[in-house]
Amino acid sequence: MKEEKIELIKDGKRLSGRGFEELRPIKIDVGVLKRADGSCYFELGNNKALAAVYGPREMHPRHFQNAKMAVVKYRYNMAPFSVDDRKRPGPDRRSQEISMVSRKALDPVILRELYPKTAIEVYVEVLQSDAGTRTAGINAASVALADAGIPMKDLVSSVAIGKIDGEVVLDLDAKEDNFGEADMPVAMIARTNTITLLQMDGRLKKEEFERGLKIAMTGCRKIYELQRAALVEKYSKSGNEE
Ligand code: ADP
Image 1 (cartoon, rainbow, N blue to C red):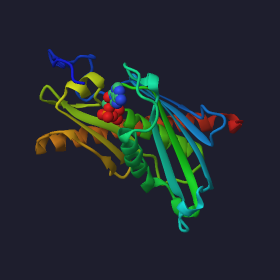
Image 2: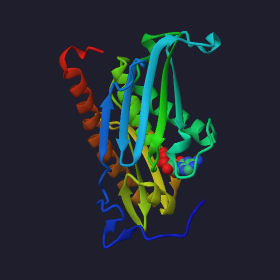
Image 3: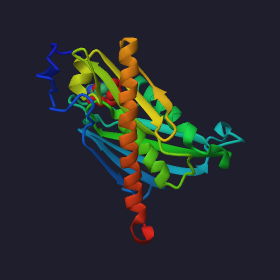
């Protein structure tokens, strides 16, 4: 439901006070869930996402097994209390689509062929949402996969760009997403500049798209450094006793 249009940029600043190419504050905690093989809590501004990874473990039902490689299952779910109005619990078309594109964003880095016939299960729970939940989920899932010890070529990092009041900006919040002209989530393997997810809601001119993609890629590189630092911090602690 769209409310009445509001001004998103005033005196050259976004409503939040952020610059056009500035990310929201990020917080990453690795290994926060004891029962999961790997887990990560990821905060992006007012988004709070939790990822849990299980596996590789036997694939059920067995007819979904792939004899050559592991199958990655990804379930994105938004908690009923994660939005302003209570969200109807359970899967819907949006969460199914986000689950699919998120899985595809991560598939290329996972060395699936090492674990034929198994499932690698990724669960992402959004506890609080403020636009950008799929990107927060992918960032969390990527770190949780590494925490689970799943062999990967690299991490995947994700952030959206968008257009608000005619300006291309990084990392839209919910107001900007709601009242803006375009929203374009991107995921990439930061070290190789390989894009693994690119979606677009709204319209961008060619030049805006190109600039936006560059800004998103720079954002992904910053997130990559934070993901790495969070993993290094956890695994440089003595013995990793959990
Ligand atoms: P993303 O969260 O990845 O940006 P969308 O663009 O679909 O995905 O959603 C933008 C934001 O809209 C969400 O982060 C959330 O704050 C809000 N939103 C999405 N679905 C619902 C819903 N069913 N009820 C209320 N708010 C929602």
